[in-house]
Amino acid sequence: AQSVTQLDSQVPVFEEAPVELRCNYSSSVSVYLFWYVQYPNQGLQLLLKYLSGSTLVKGINGFEAEFNKSQTSFHLRKPSVHISDTAEYFCAVRKNTGGFKTIFGAGTRLFVKA
Amino acid sequence: DAGVIQSPRHEVTEMGQEVTLRCKPISGHDYLFWYRQTMMRGLELLIYFNNNVPIDDSGMPEDRFSAKMPNASFSTLKIQPSEPRDSAVYFCASSLDRVSYNEQFFGPGTRLTVL
Image (cartoon, rainbow over all chains, first blue to last red; front, side, top):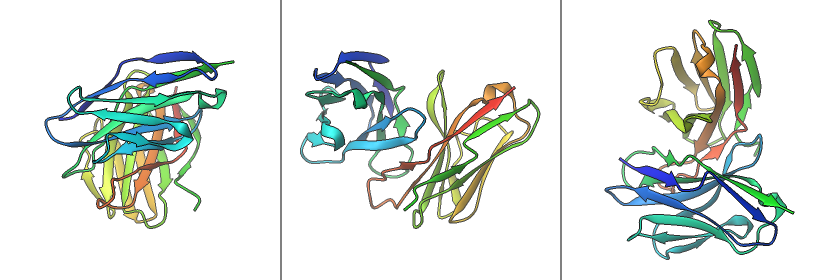
C-alpha cells in the first residue's frame, strides 16, 4: 500500500520569500506523484505531476517539485511567493500500474503574509 | 467545458434524514470519484466508477452510504440515515482514462452539515 506524509501542517511565509512544502511517500512499487492546490471554498486542482524521466518537474504558477527516489520525497518549491498563493496544498501518490486509487496527504496550509 | 458540477453546494439536514448529493462529470470522462474531506481525516476516497461501474468501494464508511452512476453524465452519493459525524465536504472528481496519468478534475464540493 502507498502512504503520503506532509511534514508541515501550516507554513507561514512573507510575500516574495521562497517556500518549500515537504512531502514524503512510502510505496513498495513504482508510483506517480502529484501536487494539488485547493483555494478556499473550491475543489482541488492539479499543480504538477511526476510520471517518469526528469526528476525536476515544473507546474503552474511558478511551482516546481523534485522527485528524490532514495529519500522517497517529492518536495514542492517556489522561489518567490505571492499573496494569491495562500491555499492548501496536497501531495498525492498513485501506483503506476493497476488501479486508480490516489492517496492524498493531510495537506499543508500555505499562508502568505504581506 | 463547465467542469465537474456538484449540487447542492451546501446542505443542512437533521440527523436521521436522507441526503442525496449529485455530480455531473466532465463530458467524455470515464472515471468518476467520490471523496470526503474532514479536518480530522483529510481527503478520503469513498468510491470510484469506471464506465458507470463501481470499481472500488472500499472507502465507503458503512452501509448507510451508497453511490450510483446510472449513466455517464450523472452520479449520486446517498446517505441514509444521516448522522452528525457525516458532516464534511464531499467532492466529486472525474478523469479521462487510464492511459493518461489520471489527472482528476474536482468539482467545487458539497458542504454537508448534519445537525
